[in-house]
Length: 140
Image (tube, rainbow, N blue to C red; front, top):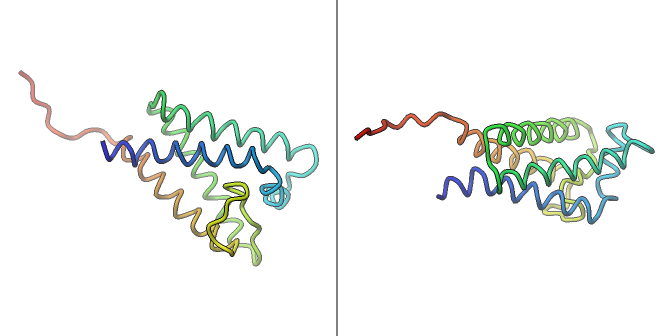
């Protein structure tokens, strides 16, 4: 049961929280989108797509977990890691806007490092459930 909480429910909760906070405070991710070249007419559709992707995959992990949903979640979190790493490579990274206005650190760099570490742990939890069960089965 604890493994399920860590491997499926925790990533689902993080994705749902992130989607809700982005939807409630969309301005906070605007700077990050602009640094990626998504300005003007592209920013709003990208934000809406992110919110729906996070919310949809998060809800699916809770309500109908499957290998396909887990792979989608791993892909989404991996993409977020790559973006965060690209931001960290900049001399002065922008605030990622991962959780809207919610901040754990004062420094955007610290937020980015924490975001990469958090996402890697969530990916590890999701990947754990993708491994085949190697326990010996007992047949009666």
